[in-house]
Image (cartoon, rainbow, N blue to C red; front, side, top):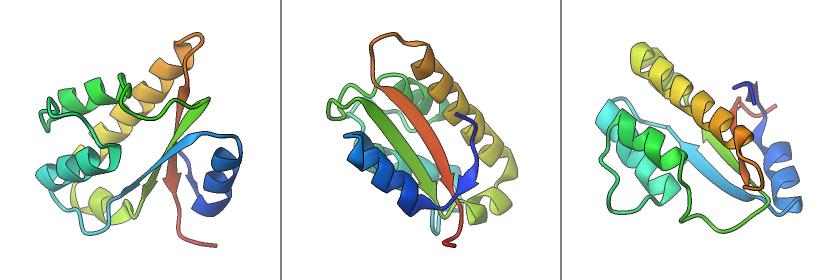
Length: 123
């Protein structure tokens, strides 16, 4: 799925109605890569092996075996504009990793997919 700012509530409601696993990654107040990695680890509830770097994040998003079984997964990224403004290069890297993870899961046959949503401000 293309990363696209959209209101969050309708997407979460639709995903939950379909039985999907939903994860909210709230970036409010995150202004450093280290803080971003901690926030990602907490939101995704990653295993202990998570190394807190870009490669580890990409690996975690390509695994997700610790999340509940579901027909699909929605990762909703909220309050991201401050981080994007403060750390534009890191923000670009994060977007690339999220896009690649969504594409990876789209290519997997018979496995729950991953949809990434950049949540815009409430309407």
